[in-house]
Image 1 (spheres, rainbow, N blue to C red):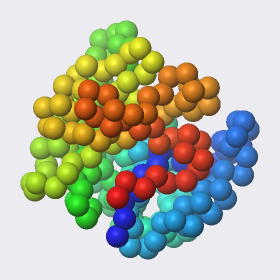
Image 2 (image 1 turned 120 degrees about the horizontal axis):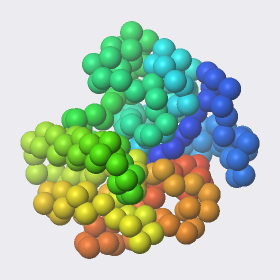
Image 3 (image 1 turned 135 degrees about the vertical axis):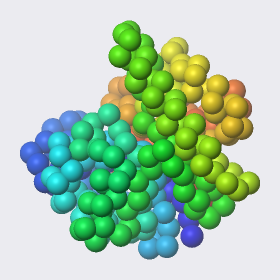
Length: 229
């Protein structure tokens, strides 16, 4: 049983907002399907760190969730991204998944999961530029969600944190996020959100203050899930 991760699938099987119009994203759904199923097995787990579906409402996610649940191998743990406008309460999403027999999908939202030798924790995060009281309010909410996730761990396995927004972006960083990561002795953090030229200019991959940071947006990892262990 292996653990993989990826972010920013940006699926659009139930609406008219495909990513094919962007350079490098041509035929991306089939590329994800083929690459994913070439390395992931049914007993494996894949964490998807946000921007999962372009659907605006949960009920419009059916085709995308059907693809994730029934076409992609393995179990999946989904995290909220900035474009997941369909996202609601965990209870509502869990009920939707159960009603539609999407039994290979779980939601990471104020909670955690244990997969093999790892604890899976995380939250969406937020922009590094805090320009308003609303930004500060949202960031504080995300910090609280991350703590809730980390506090729900009840074993001594290694804990990995997944974020959608990068905690480090060029010369900017979210000190509050790093404070939490250090306080909980986190040594691995995976994130998404960055695409195109932003990958080249602003992403950080490597050790930062004792924490391994890695960008896992779909186009940055050649539309292929990344093996964690």
